[in-house]
Length: 117
Image (cartoon, rainbow, N blue to C red):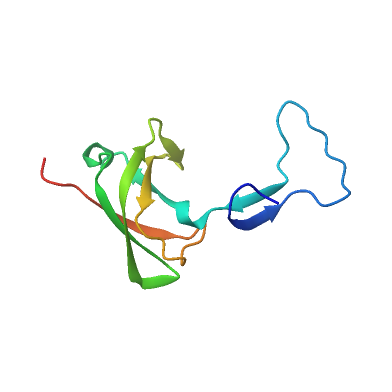
């Protein structure tokens, strides 16, 4: 029984298993609240200067290529993610209406719209 509604994403322990709590609380079950999904995009360092919190965004996912989802930038990571020598910044987009179609880890193509500043 969980204190929130959600979809069970994974179960780390099963009934009857011994669990040892050390310095941190153990994870038993991971729940996903599909109404609170976010899109995290990697934005290249050459473009990040034009992205601001509050900018509108749209994106598609490979599973539904004709469907366009919308949202707003809610966070820009203060530190870079460097993969293979490429410097990117994680930008979090709050999804306006997930419509029950989106799942964690889906591949997205994101467009961020900058208003005239």
